[in-house]
Length: 320
Image (cartoon, rainbow, N blue to C red; front, top):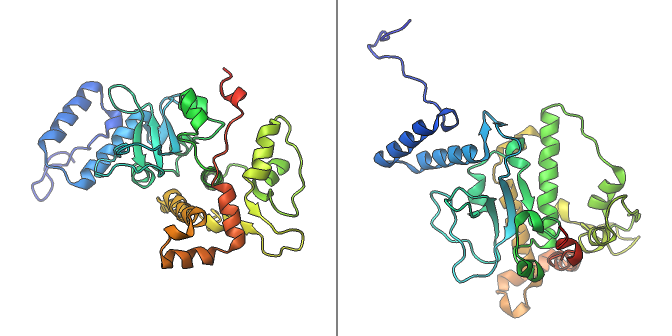
């Protein structure tokens, strides 16, 4: 029934999300935001809405599937201050050598990338939706042209993820996609030889099998330099496994979607172990030395190998 209810209050009108407003209504809402004192929760909610609008997502689906906005995960290059995190409640700059998200094009006037701490960015997105997850791109030798890095940056390896971070980001993304397909009852298919390369390389039991269509340079990089397993040979009963160490979840439970900081948690532990494994002993405190000893010789050997930045085949990187 229309009109006031039994308590004399009128029915509250439905508040439309930003996605459903026309341009004039959006501008009016922005002006109203400036007049109303906002809580941090309000600001984060509006930041989420702005990002959804930026990438064209309505009700969990992409309004423009070919919208070119991408979320690059990269290593922050060295600079005097570091880029400011664009999260609405974060006042910190992103330290050089930290992992960060670059949203490209950004939401600023000049469409330059917007940078975020990975953990801050996770507060604004829902990686249980393909519209967000599929935009994640690790900045590696294979995506330099998409990221739009300069020739000097490519040669210097600026912004490139180290090998361990590259493998962990891609495995996390693949695991999340697999879980998404299971939730949506989509058949999950794999290519055995490619799956073995990605997840068994480095093991004494792994058999080298070139992948059709994969350049020799890439096959060598994945099977040797970026192998996720470190082994002492055929008699090794305790091979070290990158994914078992840093991705403890098997992503078989839909509840994993409710853990929004899974990616930043993974990268945080990896970054800490990478520092311990690669640092000179005289740079470590006594406690840090104890933590390094706990890693073990095999893990330290593997982490050091995976800490290197795999460089591109230069000819391919500059090929149009």
